[in-house]
Length: 155
Ligand SMILES: [Cu+2]
Image (cartoon, rainbow, N blue to C red; front, side, top):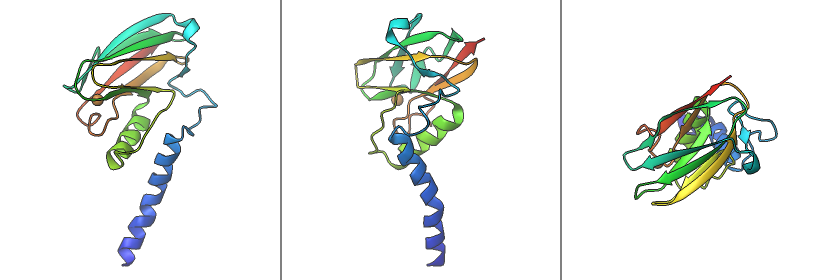
């Protein structure tokens, strides 16, 4: 009985964190290290990314310049739903874990696009800082199966 109570307490912060993320509450006021939502009128580059049921993106590695506003055109070539979520490795891992635990949780944030089977979606993003940005599909199990890639933002 004691043990059960303790583990429930241990779970609570994770739940609170997951809830916060899905309300879009994780600090959109400040630009994240991986960038910020871009202005569609200021797109400087368009990148086509295919998402496939093999749990792979094509391409998996993308290079952009710091300050660029990129329009991602996401083509889902599969029969499953896929996503394209931008972030850093720790936030994506955490988010993927939450999606796996609570698969019915709806999530929609400015740093992601969800694309249904055979559909095309877009995401405009400004890469305001140099470094590495990750992207991943957070449909339950997809990240764990290797559905991820990286964007190098050159200074
Ligand atoms: Cu996927």
